[in-house]
Image (tube, rainbow, N blue to C red; front, side, top):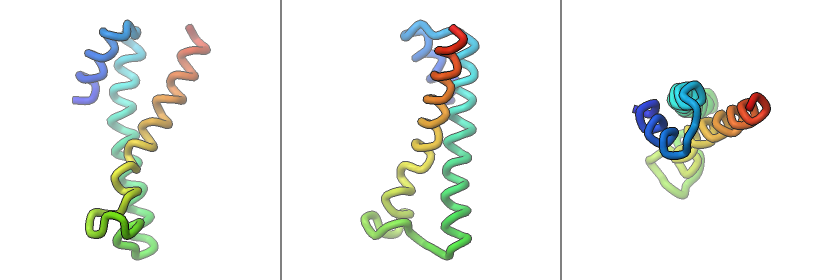
Length: 85
């Protein structure tokens, strides 16, 4: 789904097809990886929530862990493609 959404956004913003496909798949993979990494850290240290702001839902950071890793990927991909183009 993220590839399809990013493909539509890529058409609107006039991205190349290669950038669109890599970004779509990368966002999917890195957001999933970020969520798994945060869960792994919580399990290793026996923590139920990262904070008490949103109790029972993983805490405040749990809402943004996949966004942080996917955003870092998109930023690095942008740096890579801006050097190539």
